[in-house]
Length: 200
Image 1 (cartoon, one colour):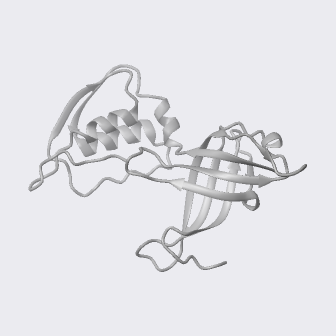
Image 2 (spheres, rainbow, N blue to C red; image 1 turned 90 degrees about the horizontal axis):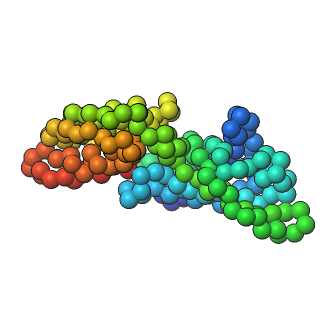
Image 3 (cartoon, one colour; image 1 turned 180 degrees about the vertical axis):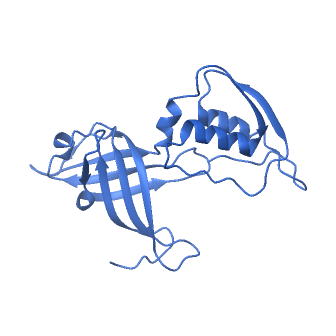
């Protein structure tokens, strides 16, 4: 195993495709590239994986853009001198068309999004929901009730909002939309009393 030399550089250890019925296929040796994107301006982590393979996985494994992908890689952090292992589960949502390199080998891309985006599609519970609490507690409650399928983790900053938020969530609002609405109305404690919270 080669050393990870710079922050942000990673060494891929394992890539597993997991079908809807739970079948797993290790495609690590076929991976040409992996891109994982995280930004405070987007609500979820996204990414893509480029595969070069001659096993016709798209046909035999029935890739239809509805699989889970388990990624395992080692990466050095900014403050950590040792490479730490990262386990990440992503949801596929589409595949690109295949390009033939020769008679037996094809290349294509699998596009990824955070599994939380699919929990979000389920929406809120039927009926209007009345909420009253501080922003951090409201967000924690909505996240646990509507977005957390058991393996998600929510981290909230150390500064607790000082204001109480009361509202009725419209029927068409999705959980992530509701959380964004709440975040914009959280007020920081003194000396900085402005709506400076962001959800990502």
